[in-house]
Length: 469
Image 1: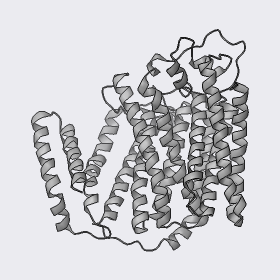
Image 2 (image 1 turned 180 degrees about the vertical axis):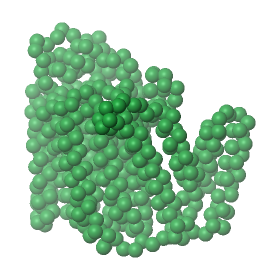
Image 3 (image 1 turned 90 degrees about the horizontal axis):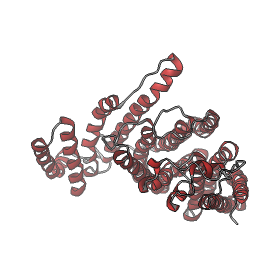
Image 4 (image 1 turned 120 degrees about the horizontal axis):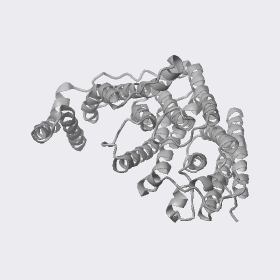
């Protein structure tokens, strides 16, 4: 019933629906046509149905050991446990791209269902941006990474799965990580819609923040599961090894953390509007960049499982269209937003000031990690010289930025909006500071190394500050 041909047909239909979703609601919003604007929600639901059907067909092929399907033959086997036959669907390049498209369709469907209180024009534009982004990935899936491609003659048994990947934690790591990656498409779509409308206000910040927090939470869980797996399976000796693909997931996490904090300032104080829009664009752009780096084979990593330059060029083109188009729109419309932004004044010693410092620290760390990750491939390209940048560089370059950031994290919630007073801040920070100093003394007694001792004390300081708040 759920054969590969039906899966291919459903995937093609989803691509067509996504293209229509990218056009009709946008035209309706520009012309004030109510029926066209409402069509966005219907099209988002249709796209989700088609992609869910396509994904079910791929799972059915894997469970039924249909080795005439290339992705099943390359990544499954008769003796493989049922749970890993299902998990193996997204444990390869083709299946993971289909899963990416399905999660993006889920995001569109969620906006259609839970965004009914949004202004019609804004919701239509958000769904149109999500439809256009989805259409690009579905074209990529159909043209270069079709998970239903046939092989002839079909083998009697499949090639199986890398034994290292047959792990419960890793089975759920990719879907959760992708929910984080793809979830930032919603704040991105809100940012593009706001740029088109030329309006960012407190209500916009209130609408964006829940989507950003949900995506950030999923990305955090996905990264944590991957780190745990690499720690106890690969024996790297630490929960973070500064592997290039680990860094590719860390980059959008850093800017996403900055985004959820700056969105608070937009919502509460109607400040940092333009900066928040730029962060929304940058975060999803870094998610797409991470996909490009992994799929193109540019980064040498234990995670690498797709090394096709054609696919890399396609994703790079998609990245240029999506991120480049959004940044060009930002450059064009930012002056309009600046004229309508309002004053939003605040003192340096205030909750807004602490959140600005938080954003600066997170983006500075992001810039350092991006530089260290991308320098080796650029050096090989420009100077024909192979070099490697490892953990010593990242530890040395990020710790001087991270430790002050950790020290400030606990102070932010203790400060009032707009203007704070030093005496009141010291009074509120007194108990957490005493607890942190006690933890520091205890760590110096039982731990070895200045960095572990300092970070342990800062962790206690952050927890105590949060409890005090």
